[in-house]
Every structure is written in structure tokens, then in C-alpha cells.
Image (tube, rainbow, N blue to C red; front, side, top):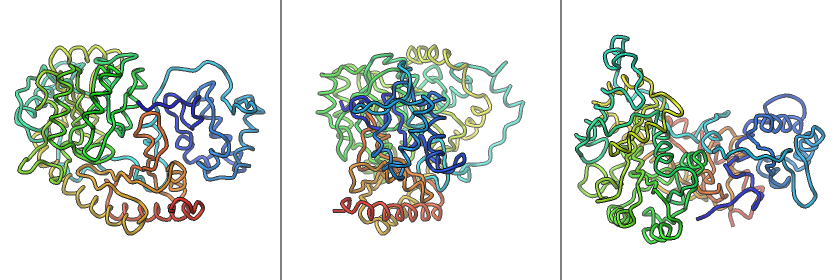
Length: 493
């Protein structure tokens, strides 16, 4: 398990995961006055909003100056202003802390840091940019009452929607191999993120452990923080999770569940081969731990990621014989994230348990979104095929353009999805990400995809955009990289 805390490492990420440079994105253009005054203004807002909790240690001034691409004097002047106001305190040899002693519960901020928007071209978030790949769907008010039944508020989904998703599994295709599924085995959620969160809360609970691949979906770490559960990291290679490492983690850390992504992996874009899947399934069967199987990107797996002659990917549900497998699906990546429609497919007793966890927070998914989704479900195979066609085109272009624009970077060619998991010859890409923002392009540091937000050489670039926008965004990243490497000539050595 790789775990670092703010107190131990003095990195810009406290327990719970605030990445300060990302949090302050756009600070130089907010407010008025000198650069130090604007930085102090942004820091003050973060402290007063409670995003930077009392007792939290700021990064060293030199480190923060590098991450924000400003002089150390700018940092010192900004902190002096906050020190005079009593918002931060500094102690020789210990550092600068947000004033106060109590530390609130952990709150994950990885997704918030990189969904908060910003100026320039957004190559950080990976969602369909428009709805041009969708067929025309109309909904009138009579459909809402006809499909909803009474008030239309059902905690785990409209009966008709649950049946539609169950039928989707029965016929296979979008959801993988056909499998007999009843409506009672479906819980309709507000996206896959909520589905995973409900499963972690139900299966793991506070203080429990979840095994997962070392590089992973940033949101899973926010979910674990919110549920006060802990990640235990399984080593990976280019084929995915290493079975021997998973076995050792289960023996040493006793996780209650395994979080596993089937299909194109977020963020690496790799697909776990069938032989590796079988080995992992055998291990979880033998140890009796539950599997939270995230199939969100499975429908967007390219032909290069499928077994020879197969039309869909095998899943952990197909391969596990005794372990409980809860499958998570979503329309966000194939259709449109704004629908906020996902689901859990699991044994009926588990579905009922997730319902009670949901009712503590909200009373059910949107009826209009479900009715819209029911209009799309019959077309999902065609919709996914069109999405794959578009993504393969733009991904191919982006990989080729990166090789000519930034030849020093190593791009892991994805087998599905829209993310280029890219390695730069640096120890920490955080400062490069900040400099790229100043050049007008948003990308995400690889640190949001690992336990402890440990800095590293990777960045996450989403190219699910029109080709001309991707072209310009990568050109801006290239200019940022050349400026960065010119200021730090050792990075290319």
C-alpha cells in the first residue's frame, strides 16, 4: 500500500486530497491589485470556505512558487498578508499552517479540482462534448406519469427503467455477454460514480479496505475518502493488475472488496487480457471478497482491446464462480454525462441494502432523465459503435500529433476510451500542468490517479473533443513543455 500524508511529506495534498495548485487555478486573473494580493485573495477564500482545513500545512514557499510558476517573493508577500490577518501561522523549521487546531472529516477533492473548469481548452475532463451521435428522443408530460406511476419518485428507479436495464443485460451487447437478469437486481443511480459510492458504503463501510490497481479512476479515491474507507494498492503492469500482488494484498491487508474496471481502463486505456482476468477471478473466489466491477468504459473498448473473434469483453461477473460481483454501468460516456444515469446490477439482497444507504442522502433518480434514457436504450449498440468510431479517429490523430509535437513524451496508446496516459521525463508533472493552464490548455496531473496523490511523471489528457480543438490544445501543451524544459534543462537529459 502506498500512502502519504501531508504531515509526513509536506506535499501540497493533505489527508483527503487537496491539490493546492489545482485548487488555485485561475487565481492570477481573479480580484485586483498586485500578483501577491491576488494570490492572497484566492488563498483567503479557500481558508474561509473550509477547503483548506484548520491545522493544514501549506507546501514550502519554494515548492509552491514552482507549482504556481511565480517568484518566491510573490509567495512570501501573499503569505505575509495572511499572517497579518491571523489566517495562517508560521513556525521556524515546521512550516506554515492554516490557523486553528481541529481537522474536519476527510473530503475528497480530486474530481472537484478537475471539473471546476478554467480558461482555455479543456483536455482534462473526459465526457462526450455534444449530443450529435444520439438519435432524436422526445418526452412529453404524459410519458412521465405513464412511465413513473403516481408521483414518479422511486428510490432505486422507475419500475419501467429497472426493467429496461434488466432487459439490456438479458440481450447482451452494450453490457457484455447476455445474462439472465431481473428488474429486482437493478438499482438506477445518478451516474456510475454514485453507484460505486453506494457499493463502497454498503460492502465496505467506515474503516474498511478496498483493493484496487495502483493507477485508477480519480473519483474512486474521493469515494473512499467520503466513506472513510482506505485504498490498498495492487501493483500493475501493462496487462493490468498483477495477480501475485493482489493475492499478497488480500493476505496482508484483508480488504472487503476489490474495485475493478472492465474494458478500457481509466486512466491508462489498457484492457486486461482474458488470461489475467481468469487469474484475478480465481483469487477473489478463493478468498471470498466482493467485486465492485465498473463497466463504464467497457462499451467504448476498441477492436484492438477485444479477444480475437469476440464482439464484447469478458467480465468478472462471467468468470467468478462464488464471489459476489456487483456490476456498475452508465450512459455518461456512451451517451451524455448530463443525463446522470447509471445503475448497479447485483443480487437482490445487495440492491436492497444499497437502497437504504441512498435514502440517507437522496430520494431517487430524476424521472425525466430515466424516461429519456429509456428512449435511448434500444439504440445503445449503435450509439456505442458511433462513439467508438469517433474516438478511434481522434485518439489516432492525437497520438500521432503528440509524437511530433512533444517527442520527449511517451504516450500509452489506449485500447479504448478517450484518455492519453502520457509520461514526461520529469519527477513531478504538477508544475507543467500549471504552466499549461497559463498557455490556455487544461490537463490533469497523474497524481490524481494514485493513492496518496504522490507526484509522478504522468499526465492525463482527454481528447474527446473535435479534432481541431485537440490539435490546438496539444500545440499549446507543446509550447508549455518547451518553456518548462528550457527553464529546467535537466528534465530531458
